[in-house]
Amino acid sequence: MRAPVTLLAAALPAMSLLAACAAPQQPPPEASAAAPAKAVLVAIRPVPNLQPTGILAPLAGQAGNSGVELVARMPDGRALSVVQPDAGGLHPGEAILLIDGPPPRMVAGD
Image 1 (tube, helix red, strand yellow):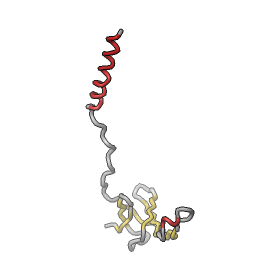
Image 2 (cartoon, one colour; image 1 turned 45 degrees about the vertical axis):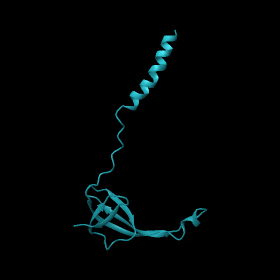
Image 3 (cartoon, helix red, strand yellow; image 1 turned 90 degrees about the vertical axis):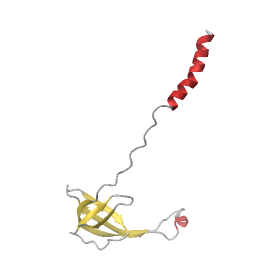
């Protein structure tokens, strides 16, 4: 009965080594840099300066999140909204390009 236990004790490290030699797991694919999407700007509205409140407010200092919300109509009919620091000279009815990335933004289209 001693031989099977010894064989098992010797096999466990070998199985660990085999598992370590297995094909490595591939990380999830990163978002590819897609071409900018074309759309039509339908609305621009100001976003108020949102000052942090509560116990974490002193850590945030004077930084607030102000800017504009841009709403665009995609070619397939979907509405898409992006908040960015300024409108960049864009006007409702204008063709725009949606740049996907951190952060997403809208710019004048061609």
